[in-house]
Image 1 (cartoon, rainbow, N blue to C red):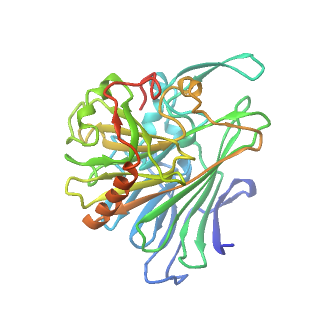
Image 2 (cartoon, rainbow, N blue to C red):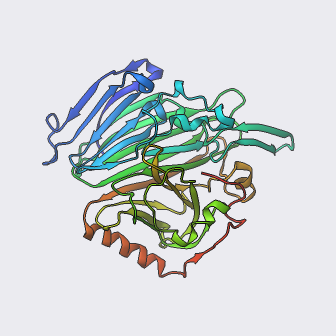
Length: 400
């Protein structure tokens, strides 16, 4: 049993709230790393009223946004920027986001995180979801882009420090997505990192707190720009099959794993991967720069997150030059398409879905080379099949 010291930053049920908070190595002396956890409320512009909790382990830092579904806004590893420069001055408070705008694409007005969850009841493009319930009764729901969770504020937030070695530090948050005549899904997320390390662990638990069966979907939109994204950067993962999600993506199939430099007006391209994994389901994906000395590695389990997508959006920096690495329960197609292919998990009343995955940052050629060798070892299980056109098993309608 791990021993923690914790501080409650927000607890709606008990009417508790800390507008500002700080703790660190000057109070709890754990090793040589100068770690800290700080909380403040942002003011001014579109960010007015957004809570921000910054966790700094002495080498790796990241900013948690309780106001935006416990997403990660930005980070830094030994001077390397983690995230991307969106064409908005964020982070954006949900009160300024009308998800119904632009035909259901209004979600994009608040999208500028390094890590953004898409879900929990659905993700993918907007549209009308027509289906029958378990009693055969017809239903119709208007779905907006990528669901609701990214614009739902946390009702409970806690800073945590492990009192035992390696003394992980982090933040726990709880967010509820629901409403009358809607599924009641509850997210508990914990971010942890060890002082001085290059690794961040994300643990998510999604519970159905309603009295009926509830569908769920989650896609982790991990977004990166320079210095990891540049002309000649590559994305590498061990895969059995990969296919473009749309005819537009098929245009770039010859440069599937390579990124071009920024180009004004570039039209996004999306690719769906069926990844290879070890006997326990563990796999990885990596984006690294042209020189091969800077990389971000995602490690996750296919048994929990069976689908993986790469989003290429190398527009001009002023427009939002970004690459997305996206482990998920599904591919980013419309929900009805994913439902037909069995990629929409159903939770019984009281049912739970859980995942634990991590993000690593490397700032040296040896570190990048070691991760590449892991990919090569997993790829030896099967010949990689690259489809030149969209495949019905992966996509039916364009997604992002």
